[in-house]
Length: 353
Ligand code: FAD
Ligand code: EPU
Image (tube, rainbow, N blue to C red; front, side, top):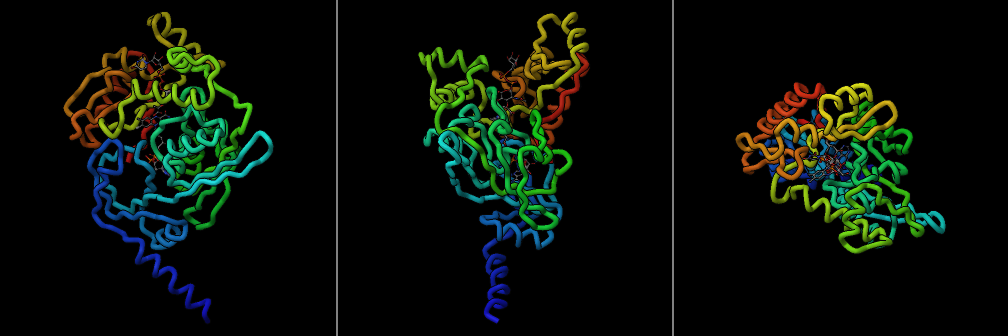
């Protein structure tokens, strides 16, 4: 009897706490700072609240982390759920390794800073990437020679259809460059609740191969860098060329760096001897920033939107008044120019809604 009463009351309590808001402005919830309204909006502070929300069968739903890789081109006619699950825990695995787990709503950079403060090695090259921990597996975030797949063990995710919590391991995630099953075969199927990483407690593997890091460490006068030094160098480099979303609306790289067949690259090299590329077997990754700069877009502004003057791959809300549609249309112009001049089709990295 008691058990039944408890069961009946709990969802109601949660329901009252959940505060589903209507016609909600998302302008403060996306780093482009564009205005878009969601028909319904709710913040989920626990897995129970999340499950109860899903049981209400709103459709469509959109999960929001830090809003730093999303472009709203129109209002969202469904329920936006902002995930606020918090908490970080660590479990020593052996004398060299620790398993660190963070809930989805933890800020990514704060999490990386936490690991560095404990002298846990592995994530230092990924310092200062905006967004939340729960989003990091979606596109296998990467920077300066590291991707999360290098240290990822598994994530816990809520299956939206069954409401069961599943553990998805490294192999199942099928991580690639800015890619995972969460963008392909399992798109829209899961809500990531927490992510676990295996990090080192000593004998850290310091990665300084990415050219800019070794140059910055030299500038700082550091010869034998610690993980703390690498994080500092990465933060300095990022601050020197990437616009701070708190000041200028943006979502980082708007496009992926395209990979083209070696034969196509060699042909292009004859026509454009300056073209850059990073060979990988029979393929070459071409920096999209170079292609965009060399089609004349770097620093160029149309209306409220521009390509950033220090990093052509970053599209900015230059006046703070841009609409999502304007930004999207600007990106289409860039795609068309690059395609026309180099025959390469750029693919958007940012999630378009
Ligand atoms: P959001 O924008 O909130 O969401 C992105 C997508 O993931 C949406 O489709 C959303 O529905 C989905 N989603 C969010 N949370 C969940 C969840 N828990 N479960 C299921 N789906 C979810 N990225 C890099 O890889 N490397 C970089 O170096 C980098 N630099 C950046 C620099 C700047 C200045 C900016 C603004 C962005 C940069 N990014 C970079 C992109 C961005 O930081 C990452 O993609 C980040 O992981 C996005 O996290 P978020 O929480 O803000 O995602
Ligand atoms: N370049 C230009 N002009 C530009 C920008 C870049 O010619 O305006 C050329 C430069 O020659 C440079 C090369 O492109 O050597 C690569 O530039 P950079 O090192 O700045 O990196 P990126 O390829 O432009 C990628 C990621 C970033 C990540 C950095 C550092 C993608 C799509 N972008 O940028 O990730 O921080 O490397 O590892 O892979 C993001 O995904 O949002 C993001 C910011």
